[in-house]
Image (cartoon, rainbow, N blue to C red):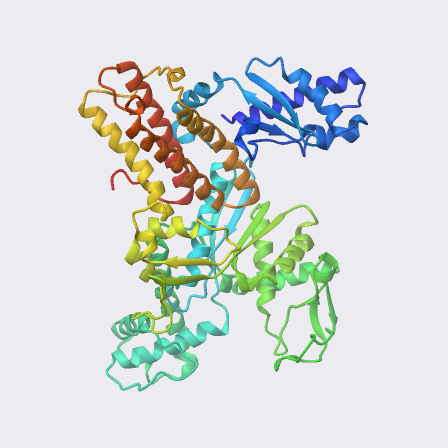
Length: 578
C-alpha cells in the first residue's frame, strides 16, 4: 500500500477529466507530476505540482489549471479540503478516515509494508568493497561496504533482482608484492631471522598466520627454490587466506556478497583479449598517441603510439590506453572486460560503490557500457563515499595494534558492534565526510541517532511485554478512529509516508534517506510517549478501557513493523530491550 501513489492516480484522473472537458490532446505526459508531503505540515497532507508541469499542454496559466483540477478533486470521498498555493501548487488535506486505513494495511502487510514493484524485476549488479586483497579491511572500507550492502537491500525491497558482488583485484603487481611479503613471514615461521621488513613490502602482522600456514603445508621445501617456482605457490595460498580474512571481516558487519569475481579469471579465460578484439571490430579501438597531460608530466608518461579505446566518443574526457609499453594489459582493459562480463550476465543496472578518490572513474565506466551495450541500454550508476574520520571523545584515533598503520574494520566493529557501525555510516549522505566518535555513538541520548531509533523499537517491545503480563493483546480488529490525539495522528501520517520514502530512496540510490526517516519516526514516537507522562489518557495501557488499550497495542505493532522494516533495509537488527 502506498497512499501517495493512490492519490497520484486520483490527481492524474482529475487532470485527464479536465483535459477531456477542454479538448486537450491526450495522453498527457505525467512523468514529472508528483504527489508528496508538503514541506510545511500546516499546508495539508499531500501537495502536487500537476498544474505547474502540465500548464503548457493546456495552454493556460498554472493557477487557472490548478483551479480546474481542484474542482474535480473536491468531490473525492477521502479529500477534506483542496487549496491552491503560490504559483499553482495544489494542497490536499485528507479526511480522518484515511489514517486508520493506513494502519490496517500496515498490520495486514507486516514485514511486506514498504516493499514495491518499482524495479519490475530489473537485474541490478551492486559492486562494493572490492578492496585490494592485500590485508584486512580498514576503516576506509567500512562506509562503502555498509552503503553498498544497504543500497542492495533497498533495491531488493523495491522489486529489483539484485546481485551483491566483490571484484577481487588479483591480477596486479600488488599481488606479487603480497606474496613476497608472505614469503618473508614463511621464513620467519621456519625460525630464520628476517630483520626489518624491507620498504615496499607489507609489514602487517596479519601475514604471520599466512607464513605459519605455508610452513606447516610445505615445510622448508620452498625456501631453496628460485622465486619463479615458489612465487605462484605462495601467491595462491596467500590470496586464499587473505580473501578468507576479508570475508570474515565482512561477515562481522553482517555483509555476505553472493559473487566474488576474480580479475585474474578474465585474463586466464581470454576474456580481456576477446573484449578488445570485439571493440576493435566495432571501430572503438585504434592505434594512436595521447596528448601529454596538463601540468607536470608524470614520470611514467610515454610519448608513444598506443592501443586506445575511443572513450571520448562516449562522453569521456580522454581516450583510454588498453596496453602498456611492455605489451601487458592495463588495469582499465580488465575493467572493460569485467563490464562486458556483467552485461553478458544480463544486468541492466551496473552500480559501483567507490571511494571519493575514484571520481575520475565515472565517465570511463559510463563510456565502456555505452560502447559495449549501446547508449541507453545499460544504466551505470556510480556512488562515491567520502572519508570517515575516527574520534574518541573528540580526539582523533589513528593507530591499530593489529595492522601497525591503519585502523581495521574489525577494530571498529569489535568495539561498538555491527549495528551501531551500520546505522551511523548511513546517517549521513555518502558524498559528505563523516566523523565517527566512539564515545558519542555509544551514548544513551537523543544526540545518538542509533540509540534513539533502537530505543523506540525497544520501547514498543517493552509495552507489549508489559501488556501481555496484564492480560492484554493487540486487537484483531482495532478501531483506530479512537486514536484522535494530534500526536497519534502525526505518527499515522509519518507511517503513511514510508512506502513513498522507500521508493524515492531506491530511485535516488540513497539509503541514508531511510535512516533519516527512522530518526523522525522515532522522534514522533518518543514525543507521544512523553506526552503520555503528562496526559494519562494517552498511555498505551489503560486497565479500565480494554478497547482503547487493545487498539493502542495494535497501533504499537504497526509502529514496530515500520521501524523494523526500515532497520532491515539498513541491515540493523532491531533491539527488543535496552
